[in-house]
Every structure is written in structure tokens, then in C-alpha cells.
Length: 267
Image 1 (cartoon, helix red, strand yellow):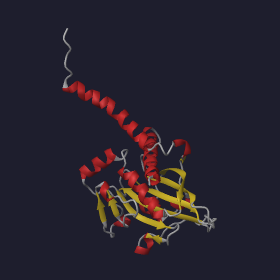
Image 2 (image 1 turned 90 degrees about the horizontal axis):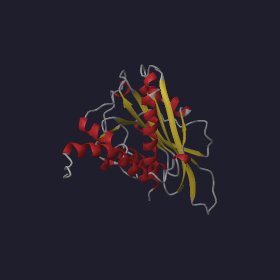
Image 3 (image 1 turned 45 degrees about the vertical axis):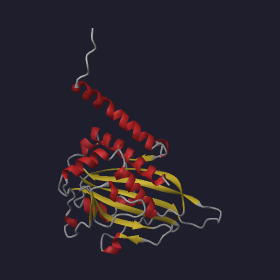
Image 4 (image 1 turned 45 degrees about the horizontal axis):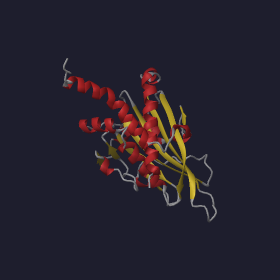
């Protein structure tokens, strides 16, 4: 009996069945330097973010919100500034393989999806639609909009270089945590997403914490803590986000975090 040639439909179904596992396998290779065993996760966020003006911007009415965070410690040269760490992290986060499907969809829509009353008088300074605009050394400007869906609304840079903040450009007052020791450096960038009054709105905060105390002349590296926090104003979606969608979010956020950190570790 002659063998039947595979039809286009059969090949298509085979591809669809194999593509996701192969894709995840590829991403797993890319993030192998950031094992989940070295990452701490929590269903909470820092007081610094919870009490920040960014949090009030995206949730002015105080609706119920879901919170989560994940962090890890990495050892880096003191020559790598906090801005470089955050810039690299954002490049890995938004430019990596896990975010690629969302990136394609958002770019295809080509729409501005971030709308908040507190931002109505602030023009978008830069539209980022390509990963080619994601730098490894410098952060995007205040009010830059990523793929129409994530807007830079605040940042603060501490660390070895001189401190800079979004507030210096007339924006939200930076919310560096007062509970940290004077010798602790804390840098962050906040991205708002969603629509005020819509079904979902929230903030992503990427941050770097490091010990700024005196070190010996032989010490060339230090541990820095990289953290990704998320607060989502769930309004009437609390039950849904606490179920299947919430589980997917935690899984997805972990992959994005690992890609961000993996980019930080690259030379």
C-alpha cells in the first residue's frame, strides 16, 4: 500500500502541536543563567510602590488590586550602573522571546492603549514599536510609550552615578523607600498600563537595590537585587485574576523576569 503524502492541514496541525514546546525550550536555554530556584516570589509589593504616586495615578479611586513581585540577587561589577542594569532588564523583558507574541499583537494594533486622567496634559515623548530602540546603557525618556501599552511615568536613579529622577523633569515625585538604610541605593522605573475606568489598569515597577557602603579596594563586585513588581487594579475582575488568569499571569511574569535578568548578566 503506497504511503500517503501528508496534507497541508496535517502539517499545519503538527506544527501547531510542536511549536509551543519547541519555543519554550528555546527560551529555557536563553534564561538558563537565571534558575527559578534563585528567585523569590510573593503575592505582595513593597511599601515604596504601594504608597507611591504612581500607584495612586493608576488607581485613583482605590479599587481592589492584586499584587505580586519576584526578585533575585546577582553579582555585578561596580562599573555597571543602576541605569545600565534597568536598561538591560527592559531590553530583555520587552525584547525577549516570551514577550514576542504580545509584541506582535500590540504592534499590529498600533493603538495607544494607556489612558489616565493624571496623564492627560503630558504628551508622549517617544513611541517605541521596535526592539531596536531598546538600549542596553540608557533608559527611555519620561513618558515614552512602549508598544502602545506601557508608559514610563516615573523613574529614580541612585547607585554609583549621580541621582536622577523623573521628578526633576516635572513629573511624579520619586518614592524611594524611607525604610532603607542610608547606605542602600534604590533605583526604579515605573510603567503604567491600562485605562482609567477600564477593565484593567496597573503598574510595573522594575527596581535595583544595592549596598552603597564602603568596601575594600580588592572588592570589584557586589550583589545587587533586581525586582519586578506588579499591581493591577482589578475592579470587578478580582475573582478571575485570582483563578486561571492569575495563575497564567504569575507564570508569564516569571518568564519575562528571567529574560530581563538574563539580559542584565550578558557582557
